[in-house]
Image (cartoon, rainbow over all chains, first blue to last red; front, side, top):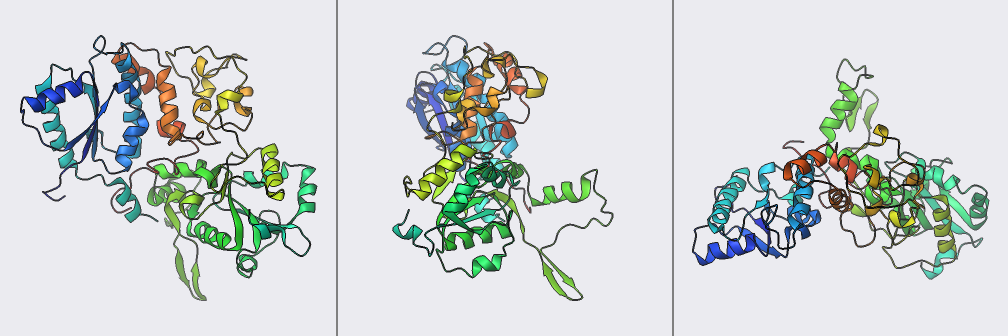
Length: 145
Length: 331
């Protein structure tokens, strides 16, 4: 792949933990690449699998879902439980679709872990850059029949 | 339905039925109308129905454009022949109906989208235990015989729905569509009483669960069972018993036929209105009943589900957001 490929990554972050961490990371001027488009959710429990599939279908090269640490950090008590029951199935689904597992990250970053967020953005962006573009739609159209 | 629909010599509706990549069950479903098939015959002239009568493609090609009032097209688009017929029948029909799950969403043939032409050919023509093919011959689209060139249609990498290759007026879901629903659709056509273009007809607006009589207690699940691993307790919601039932993510209209006899809903009527991706909806429903308070336990319980794509997208893979497994380079 070309060296100037810039991955497009969609991050679904929970308002109360990881979004706060991302905010702090920015305010603290922690170094991180600009490749993650953050979508602020009220809770990762609200991340419908369809959001993730749609992101990949419409051009994302990678997807991040991150929220509050279980068991006790969730602002709504059990939203992150819903996330960890759902995400392993999304992982399995993506594997069957032939999407590399390095393109999808889900996990927990609290509001106090801004450096951890910045590190994730750096690592994940590089990881996806190595894999190259996913180009779901264009791949599908160009190789049809 | 256009005004001139019934302006034929004998006043009868001109009807065509075609099968593309399908099992033939949709055609049988039309015969399931039983004695009403006579009413259908009284009301309509059948101009094209390869499964039942001897027609040639050239008979269709000879028709003027828009000659048929309604074409019930069942089957997915698997080969170039299927696609050519889709274009031809669109041209010759005033109303083109995607009839049955294959034309609507891809159905079981659509699971071929987890593979590609190369891997399917290798499995079917080389590896399958019942195959005797010592020379390893694979289908070729054209072959030079001494008498001249012979050709067969091209087998596509990807199964498509009818609407992915042609403009479709209505969708009748189901594998196969249920006879009373078919009759309701035919009556609506005869009465000129059709909803806006693009509608799903012959089905309901709510999920299968809404039609299911079983008692739902919203139990949490420690282990999922496949249908052959458990004898379900009658009268109780199958989901509550740990059997993955597509009812919550499937459009009603069948009367919850499968659950009522102890088989989980498999999802053939497609997603309910406003659901973008049936598999994602079913995945959410499945995850929501998992009884796990740690990540490890949750991963173990859902990890036991065999073939998530085949389970969640059993009837709708080509119509889903991602359509298919990613094609390998060179396939």
